Image (cartoon, rainbow, N blue to C red):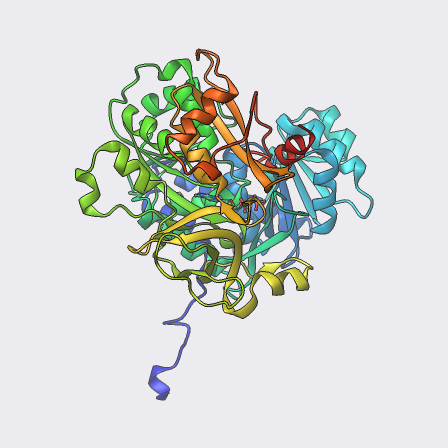
Length: 536
Ligand code: ADP
């Protein structure tokens, strides 16, 4: 390299989302950045509060790389923590608000949390988690709690911390590879693991989201996705990067969502398919047609095409994303080809139900044969494992070298998801490897059977799992929730409906009606259903 062409301070800086908030506070200081109930903060205020949080944490002894766990609903303080914690050199650990105290205590212990920021709305849960901890406890900062509550956990008041703190002067991490966040998987397939994100990866994934989802400075983003889930798929950083507006939402409430869409002029939101199902079946949705298009990104589980269709009928435009905790949330998206727009909605929805192609910020996605490690043919039929590679793949799991090695073996993130790749290069997830049903030696994709079930006009939700079968080894067992106003259905009705749409061996052999158990991130608990199916 010629000496005049070396990397130097002028041309090489650490990539970090911290630059996003600094820039937006410079460029649009007076613009409303955050709406949280009655509270409104401009970009200048948002940045100042984050800098003061950082200053307050540093004054209390936060050191480079220390973990700050936060248990709070989707609100201003959680957004501020996405900037304030890393500004002080800390690592943000946003906690799943639906976990039980023991699970939270285990995470606080495993992460060796130095600070625990606890919102009054989740006080009981947080206090019980602290009481259940075995090792050293983190210093506690409580948001909006009473004095008695603060005393009970030996906590300081968050408002006081901010009011008395000096702004933290720091702008950039020493190295873009430094950790910015620690996110625990929800444990759908095993013991929760803590995935570490770097400043660099968070920066890139956030910008990838801005581009993929078409965020603009005038966008208004509604927080229907929990910020604890892969840092809200990195949207706290994405929305801030483009200087758009955050509208907070503490809990899923369809009436409030529809109201905020109108009152705040919401243009974009992200949500798991289960939330879309709630919106579709809310009384407020009956006959609803939005006054303008609202962009919805959905993922985290497969959205049945019937759900996509119903949302589009109301005036939402859907983007289907796929991702996991290990890759900062969204990594692939079902990029719509121009010619799809001429197709009837039903056909378009079927194409969109596929998980799609790699995002701009992901380098490689492929489906490989699990034995040979080689790519499977692009025939839409051969099942293999989805693997990913790029700068938006986690650094690794905290204190779990073996699991990190397994996940990132041979230069690819092994997702554990079974997929096919279509001739147009779009991938389609068929199952998680442990959810696939093997009947008489044939693979049956539970998602394919569910897709057929969702086509039934009386079905609201459906999940299909393997049931032990003396003759076939396993057979598909369907669990179905009917729409509230639906006529009752029999097991035979459901099986007959599937037979019109699926090969006979794929049709459920047993059907159970009732509500479906969900995980803390709104996914249907298939392992619980498998247990129930085995007992039938
Ligand atoms: P956990 O692994 O604990 O469930 P994650 O949020 O990391 O928590 O879940 C990621 C998994 O969710 C993926 O591995 C995949 O099985 C599933 N998933 C995510 N998005 C989609 C999608 N669009 N379609 C189908 N499955 C999806």
